[in-house]
Image (cartoon, rainbow, N blue to C red; front, side, top):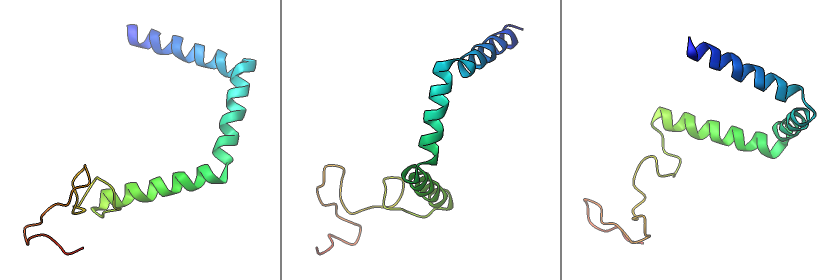
Length: 85
């Protein structure tokens, strides 16, 4: 029962914040941020990257595949030997 009461209290406090002048300012700021074209482009780019990662594709990040270099930038030999630059 403690979790239900805690959630109820949390929801009450969130509702009070949302209805306060400070909460309204935060809501307006969040709306402006969400409607910014740069933000929308970043979200779309992140969605595409996640989709590629889930499908097994590589986007050039650290999540998959070898880039031929170590984390410190040194060249890395492949099983076939070093690649020509």
